[in-house]
Image (cartoon, rainbow, N blue to C red):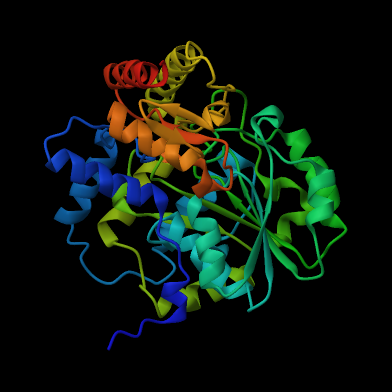
Length: 395
């Protein structure tokens, strides 16, 4: 007799991973699918990082690692926070995890009780809501739109807060929109949060270096909120190290200790070789990965230009990450090649089946008028994908 837990039955499937699986299935059937659904750089990990990994193998790093990460790595993370973010952390405030996703899950598990409320400025990364569900909390979306550059206002934040609110997630540059909060905008939101001392802030900065205009402002730089902010980062996106699975947090020490305790019962320490490679990545000048950022910016501009040629597709110009999040609601209620388009999910599925281009519905991110397009693909693939999409949408 099958009897799964309510926990797993209530957990939604990741729509990004589901679309990736569907893409692989169609490719196995011989279909030429261009995959623009996954948030994964198409670059190889830089050689200097790979060389550090090989060195670690040859030096026989093969034993269990400390649950919160090698001391040397936690010291490197502190140097990185100081250099790049103007944040002062001690190694005792750092916890290294198997990817930033585990870091986020650790935080939710140690801070949230059943019935606590999590605020999610929308659009938001798909796993935020799922992690809140796993922690037996509730979540509330704070909506935005392409007209506000997918950012919320202080007034919206104030209106969303209730006595049950315990945690808010910020993600800048943002997945899925690519939008980036300015220092001024974060300071204005901070004025609201200062009035609510029981609310913690999770600042997900995984895309900080894929940033096209100005520096990225870290929420923990706001002195009054430093002790209520947990900064999450990792090496997957900026260093093209998605499969290495290394994320980390900088947090108040009591939260860091709690995350270490939680992780000690789930996975223990992160992979030894990946940790040694991450030391090399974080200690290197940021300029060593600038070539990837420049290429992403070029691709962004190409895709925006091509999307703007399609009547009904509304775009903005994201300041970071490697995603576009066009509003496609003009197509809702229309029939394209005998396919009725009622919502973004229909639209995304239509593009997959008709144009053989994989995207992700905005429903998965709390933004039902949009779809996410990852431009972490070659220029040739992107141009061909936009050509196919244009053909599929013009009746």
